[in-house]
Image (tube, rainbow, N blue to C red):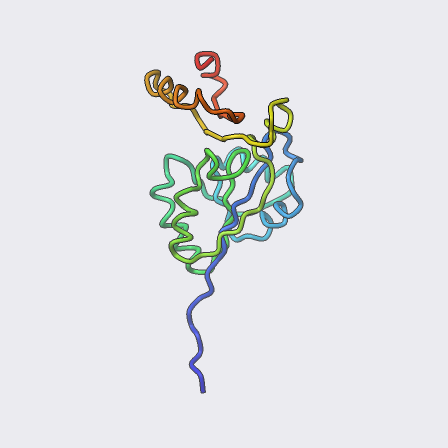
Length: 178
């Protein structure tokens, strides 16, 4: 007679894209996942709470942002290993694309936990689609370094690129960057 397997089934980490602007620009699949998971790890629980309430989603949340991700990652991995399914969301767009999430995703992969993307809006492709720039080839470079010497070196390194370039920048710093 074979032995019973008492190893708990691992949870799934869902990386869920959320709308960039209009909170109704979310996929039906994303809404279903956010309703079904055991826990939502959110970049900002206040903003996410308002977003979830708009969609009538009542689910347990925990914060997961740039200031606590080093401490929070092992806690969430422990939950996933115990069979808890978690949705990772950022304030807008796709987690880990210039938002928190990379550490958790890398740790989940290291622990052989299934990581499932739930696609949706991303600022880079949304901006490119209406930019009027060539979209057959573009490079996403993320945020420009904040310090003046570093940002000049960063921009000079990109000056010879022929593809369209996509930058992320804070509205507070855009004028000084230009």
